[in-house]
Length: 510
Image (cartoon, rainbow, N blue to C red; front, side, top):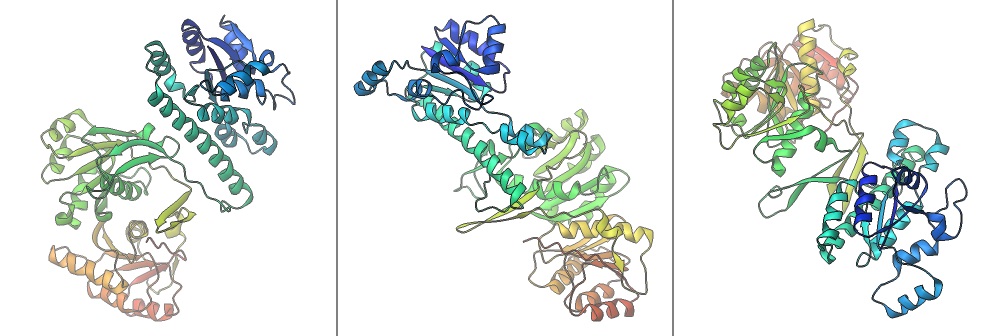
């Protein structure tokens, strides 16, 4: 038996090669892998002894050879193939171990296009595809984490068709994602990221029990190991819907840097948010916004949940808490809640991935765009268009109102007072309905909106929303501006002595 080893990431390759030798394999290798194995005292055959042709063109050509691919591809149970291999003096290669040139690491390290081009692997993917195509006769290994599993399977004669099929699928996934990464990079560099083809590649982290509903299947996939590195299950099992709610809550809670922010989400929409001096105070004020909706909700805590906060949270049923961490005392308190799920995303503080692109499935395809940026300077650079200006405290509340509105389903209107969300209307077909809905809910809950600030993620088409805000004592408003009736809206704000700011930036979220 012969094994061909040619890897860019050489972690574990020496031990793997030694294990193969013990199982009776003859080792063939190339370039740096050959040198490393040789230095480790492993008897290894250099590739040009097999190809009968030297590596050339600075290593661009070394394995693209019929003695290599013939040895991988000929069918062992085909008499004609066996006869042809014998005639051509092609010996079989029974295992191929390849991982590819570090293209991703290269584009992260340099913008030198010549160097980037040289780190596009040609021979590696070709060998992987050849071995994967002939998986019934050839074991294809592309993941260093599989080395021990492969050795054990060979040793225990468990390298059957099912085992080989799993490796084959993994191999084609490996080359497909590699090519997709290159194509996306080239389109990003030369076509502003919008080429004729768009490839979205994710690695599965885990299956969810089901999708949005029990009759659907579901799973979490990740970009760049974000969840594998940062998402930890402390208690329970994350469902499909939990993950989408966690995403919404974390995006809002992390939008204020290291601030002690707490966001409560229900069915994808925020129903509570606050930034106070302590996380306990933040949670308490966030909960006041809509304690009914918060029941069974998802809470994102931008910090570590301690004993006091845990005790407060334990007063109602929460389905999920995601935080920067949990103290041992907090975990002890939460252990009594059987249905509560606990997760961390980050260390100490919550962490968001900050993806550069965003996409949404529609029937027959998907729409793709650059990710929206709700930037910190949008409020500080906003233009006051009224006679009245906001105070320093109101500007702080305007920033909270603006960011929460920007990250909430349109049409959306938010009301914030003293660092806490006091009312919100979201996902409405009319902006004035959103404004009125929020006010009505606040009244039902006995919340005092007077003195609060208000934000809308898109412009007000009429003055009616301003009039509704004035009726409950709103002190300042922030919105993008840009309506043909801006003057009418500004005049309404002046009539009510409300400070109004235009950001010039719209944040629809559909």
